[in-house]
Every structure is written in C-alpha cells, then in structure tokens.
Image (tube, rainbow, N blue to C red):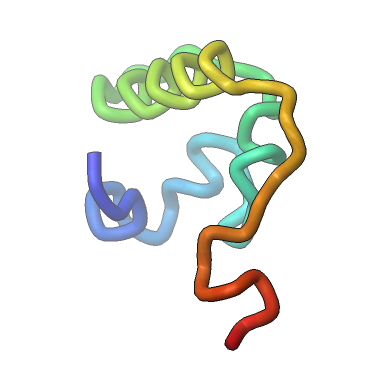
Length: 69
C-alpha cells in the first residue's frame, strides 16, 4: 500500500483508531472496524493479514549493527 499518511491523509489515524506514531505491535492490538471508505477497509485487512502471519520470536535489529553504528 505504501506510505499510509501519503495515501490516506492526516485524518487516517483518527479514522483507523491507531495513533500516528504507533508501532506495528500496537496496530495489531487495535479493534478492527468496518468503514464506509473502501481503502480504509483494505488497510484493516492488511493489518489483520500481517497480524495472522506474525511469528513469536525475539526481535532482532536489522538496522546497521543493532547499536546504531
């Protein structure tokens, strides 16, 4: 879907009920809603799809060496 803020605009966090600075884990915990706008329902479906495919493993840093270097 790309950058959701670019796609949906600034009000999307209100429409979805997810804070603008929420983590992926926090987005998985929100209650799924049904929207009149098709693209918002598509975003809800993508969140649900990623939630179902997650694995319960320890997170590892993929950015540089994990220490910001």
